[in-house]
Image 1 (cartoon, rainbow, N blue to C red):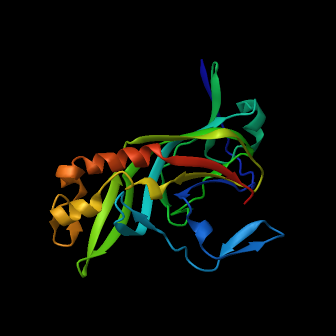
Image 2 (tube, helix red, strand yellow; image 1 turned 135 degrees about the vertical axis):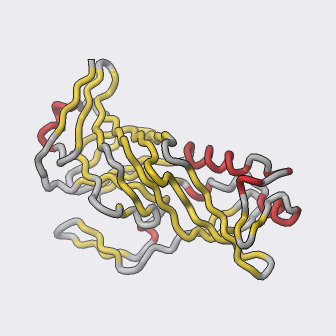
Image 3 (cartoon, rainbow, N blue to C red; image 1 turned 120 degrees about the vertical axis):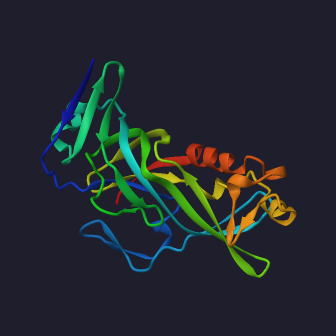
Length: 245
């Protein structure tokens, strides 16, 4: 039997769920405000280059995702009854027999993964102990824009996942998220191209080009199926961590 607990109250706890690159806004200069626990950004984050398996370096220009149907698995013996009074507005909790109880956010939420900030309302959670986060990509899916400088010109290459793609990342141990803290779901971007010999494919023509764009979906030869490999890696390589701010 499955039951759903919903809350319509504003708790004001500001315990947040964030989706971001790893690292993202943590790379930028920030100022910690001790009295409030709030960190204010003073300079924009600088995104790192990502490299193929044979060392071809792409500048990561930006990344975004729309996430929906978010389910956060409670851990540490917690159940919906333990978090019911602290559920932020729009957040629910599902009890499902012998399976772990699950905090839910319907979404969709559009996220700038470069700095972890949503375009719109914050994603708020009740303080608690969590282990796993599952979600589905909404309209617009996932998109990372990269740029390659090669042969005295710039080439664009987009890495994408479509709407409807289901993803799930699990921590290696239970994560305690305190009031005012955050649970972070991070994409491990330095792994996305590591299995691919894109440098060799660029030189051989196995990585096709049209105007100023590199067409990963049309790659052949040693890079046959490269786009699917990247999509599989994006889906598989991520992390869930807890932070005090």
